[in-house]
Image 1 (spheres, helix red, strand yellow):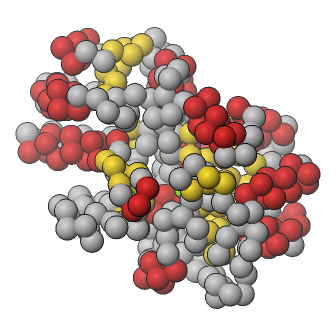
Image 2 (image 1 turned 180 degrees about the horizontal axis):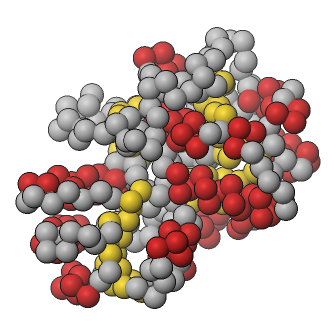
Amino acid sequence: MGLRSGGLAPLPEGFVSVGNSVSHAEGNPSVPGAGGGSARVPAADSIRGLLPWLRRQGSSVEAVLLDVDGVLTLSHRALPGSRALVEWLRREGMPFVLLTNDGSNSAAEKLADLRAAGLPFEPWELISSGHALAAVVAERGWAGAAFFRMGLLGEPCYAEAAGLRVITDPERIGCCRGILIGERPYDWESAVAAALNHLPAYPDTPVVVPNPDIFFPLAEGRVHPASGAIAAFLQLLCRARGVEVEPLYLGKPFRPIFAHAQRALESRFGRAIARERMLMVGDSLSGDIAGGHAYGCRTALVLTGVTRAAQLARSKVRPDVVFEGLAV
Ligand SMILES: [Mg+2]
């Protein structure tokens, strides 16, 4: 059940709803939504499994970016074919990383979750929206700066790993260089109020949002608000006070997480990897597929997560290829 069909408030401008996965795709200049792909969508029964297709691609695919939730796992359980796919990637020596927007769990927490599902990975093989923070901190010269953090960004904290000093007391927002929006239960009302009263006086304060998603799926079709929703809420409130806040989003569909993944793969394997030979495999049209195309990757949609075939038929975001699952 998406937000629109749930009868809640309309999504702010710049958001699209794709089943349970909602993020900023269309309307953002950095992310092509409509027409972003090459619109080569085979019939669902013509290519059923990703792995048999991938075996036939030869050198046209040089690296694979794998979304986690809805692709490898669902509700903490391995999806059919996920182990076979990972075993094949390792056996072939095909460079790959896991690419997740989940910045509220640390890499160690996410890896433990995958291991419990029977999918062990090395720490370097997982890239989350939190990891992309390090490059942004370095590029902008923020190392050592204090940032006011709403919620959590993993334990240990991605922000501290990136070189930021973290302040969580809303009373101390005045001494912070920027604002970071994380997740998990916290006193969001006090945090938003602090930011709302700080930003009109200091409108150049950067607002960094690792996970752009406005909610994440729970069991039984339920959803929970995510950090993108808090960012949009803050943006709406600030606009009413005459201040335009442009959050810096790091996760899919935005560029920083893809750039981080490409750098990590090239560094690990010691060679350049062309974007058009990178394959983004995901279950979300607005995050994985729109983001993959915006970065210049080929894209593969699997129908095992948040996107149903009927939604794909209505969507303007077109993956290059579509699969019923990983190894059907
Ligand atoms: Mg997913």
